[in-house]
Amino acid sequence: MRLLVADCEVEYSGRLGARLARAPRLILMKADGSIAIHSDAKAYKPLNWMTPPCTITEQETEIVATNRAGETLRIRVFDVLADHEVVLGEDPGLEKEGVEAELQALIAARVAALRDGLELVRREYPTDIGPVDLLCRDGEGRSVAIEIKRVGEITGVEQLLRYRERLDRDPALAPTRAMLVAQTIKPQARVFAESRDVECIEVDLDVLRGIDDGSLRLF
Amino acid sequence: MRLLVADCEVEYSGRLGARLARAPRLILMKADGSIAIHSDAKAYKPLNWMTPPCTITEQETEIVATNRAGETLRIRVFDVLADHEVVLGEDPGLEKEGVEAELQALIAARVAALRDGLELVRREYPTDIGPVDLLCRDGEGRSVAIEIKRVGEITGVEQLLRYRERLDRDPALAPTRAMLVAQTIKPQARVFAESRDVECIEVDLDVLRGIDDGSLRLF
DNA sequence: ACGTTGAGATTGCCG
DNA sequence: CGGCAATGTCAACGT
Image (cartoon, rainbow over all chains, first blue to last red; front, side, top):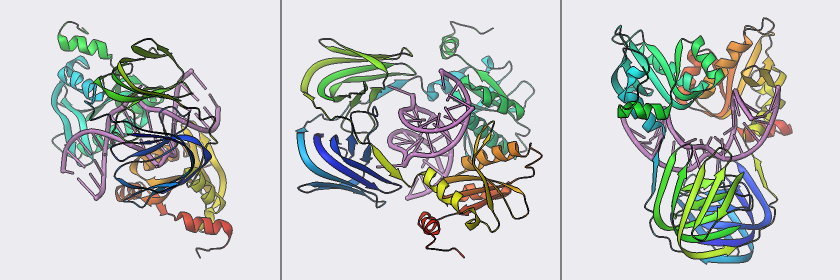
């Protein structure tokens, strides 16, 4: 990884055009072949960048990165303020917990906690427009499509409606119910969902973990 | 801006939990109060970070960042490999062109180039579920809702359908036409749009610029 | 390679 | 501050 601090001006031409007037900035060149230009603001987002795979050529006063799509990032270097090379080696990587995958696993393990009589048929039930998070059956034998989100918004409801429409084409499944399950559901999403006959359920991750352990009960 | 290269281990606890095992990494502390931990991969995305506003406290072997929401980022420093402070000053900022806003402005200036007889009523016409990009009238006096995208996808069509449904509740506007205008429209979006009676138009940014100049004509 | 979806999305706008 | 939509969204995963 190379940490180059330089007075520079930058031009990006690709999906859009972007220009940075001359100023001192950090140019971060990683071992993965990426290049990113940071100012002292904008938090973790660089002002400009190029993601790998791209080819970087460097001359006296100019660094140019180009990718396969023909996008170019051109850095004109006026003055080098610092230039450090550091060797980090491979990173052991990031371990995450609490993302949608975990939420889905917890809910899948106890769909009956959402509504009495629910039984899981399949996780990631495939349709030709993408997988339904959970496909279940209710106590009356009706199919129930469940979409799981951390935050329930209108786009999530529409995603679910697309799936329901698909599932309803299968006589073995139609007519299906649809449920949006999320840690929080935004008011407008709830209104929209209910206008389309989509049930909304908010769940608490900690309570679900408890249910999964068998140490807590909702009922 | 401080460039700290250190053998470290990191723990984030907030919207999710995340852990980084001990390894050498770049810890980037910006003047805006942000902190980001980079490995030599993942392009411009840090492994962990904290965006301002947050309070950062540093002791001998530990850096802890906390924000108002109670999220914490804890960095345990085992060994400092490099530690550089650089002063960049304020950045003149990024100038962009070719984003949706410009596309919208160009199209708004010449809606008649999309379909003969179209006239602009308003840009960003407000509804209670969000603004319609362009509201127009066609030659027969019918209202036309236009959604503009760089890339036309299914979600864009659905956004437009929500608006049309909303506009159709207003007797002064109903029944409305709907048009998706984009630089490129994905095949699935086109099929879906036409099944819902939404017109699709692909436009070329350069041609639009020419029209705006008056130096080119589509007809 | 393409399509779909998730993301600690972030960021900016407007009410 | 909350809701909404754009982002050069990026990145992961499945076909």
